[in-house]
Image 1: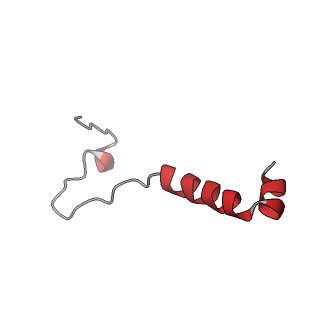
Image 2: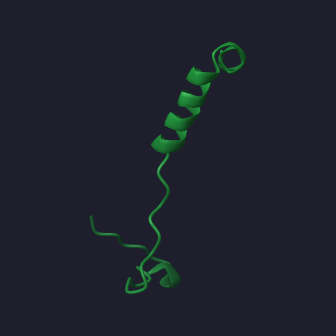
Image 3: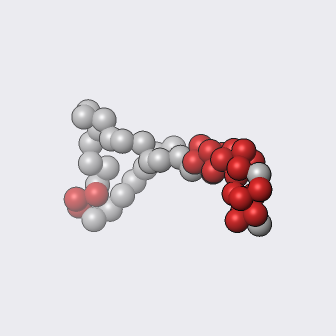
Length: 48
């Protein structure tokens, strides 16, 4: 159905593409003061 939306209703298609883009969140970048959280020791512990 997205092919038909892209051809016959481009505004709806562009809105759907933008919603998809905004709903996928990237992973946060590590800060310089963060420790390695045990990644280099082979264990990972993340406290939430």
